[in-house]
Image (tube, rainbow, N blue to C red; front, top):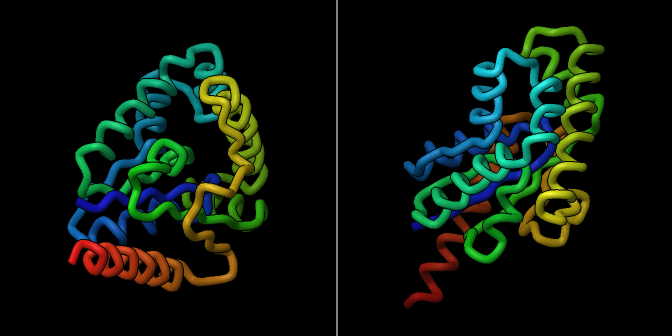
Length: 183
């Protein structure tokens, strides 16, 4: 019952890689970003506005994060979330951090969300500053601490397809190694 966690800032390719990994291994895909976006829409707020709102309502982060932990405990899952590796650091088979330069990430978000670069930059920096504050306050997690990850991939240096292949290859190796140790 594999558990894979993929983390990283906005626009690094977490969702695309997590979906590819889930599809390749026929695992469930769970994304905190999808949950967060849906909730922002339900509150009729932009992502930046909802991030500010969540700063004053930490129970929302806790609810989303508790769901991720529940899925992880069941296994057969790929988690796509900024803190998924932190929450699964003792149970995940593989914890992956994807990174990219801010400029690359904002360009990707601008294209994906069909907004100007400036709009994407302001929303991204606002959300990430809010998350950094919230995660430190709520869980005492420093998102800049990279010590918990098994693998770190700088995605702006590769095509999306290449990054997906790297992630899948790493997952195959981990599962192969896990099978060997059980024998």
